[in-house]
Length: 274
Image (cartoon, rainbow, N blue to C red; front, top):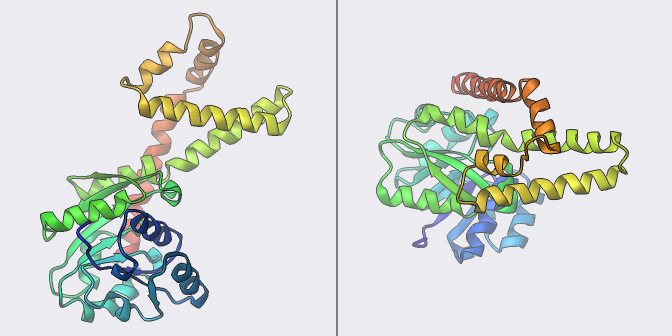
């Protein structure tokens, strides 16, 4: 990154992960500032990353090239209205808050058109293994788009979207996605225990299998469907399990679940954007 000055408004877990990723990439501590109402959180993030922190948002964003809005969606409107008078220098606004549209952000940030990138990261970003969907409004320049991509790439993969409404689909697939895998891990662990394995053994077998399967899928040059076929011997144990999944409507249930998540994401955006 060409040393932009970055201000984080809100210094919670996701902001801390982004800051840590940027520092690991070599961005100087002097180029990063953060604000947060909690004195304990300010002290923690300053000690961990060597950056300046402030209680007042306006102090953190002074002369910033990029302003990262990392506050809870429920307080975003109030935060944006307070920031509106301090954005005359035209920084890039990057929002990582779920459910807040670019139009809502623009309305709350005042009449001056703002360059806004809306992002949907996911919780594995806390381990720098996340993936984010990004959408840029028409005011975002090529340089600013690059800055936003490098910012989110500090905690994983960043993928651009051509249409903002696709953020709802990203939310359904990857934003909420870690919980789906956690649910499967819970269920497989419980099933292994029910089959007679000690719970700790069942958990370790499940977790390592999940990790290994994910790595195989990520590092393979073929799609997941082909990998599944390769490990499913005719009339074997895997085929018996797959047939049981499919008889229970597994694929249709996954589709219904993601549709429900996407619909709820759209509903929340409408509610929060009022």
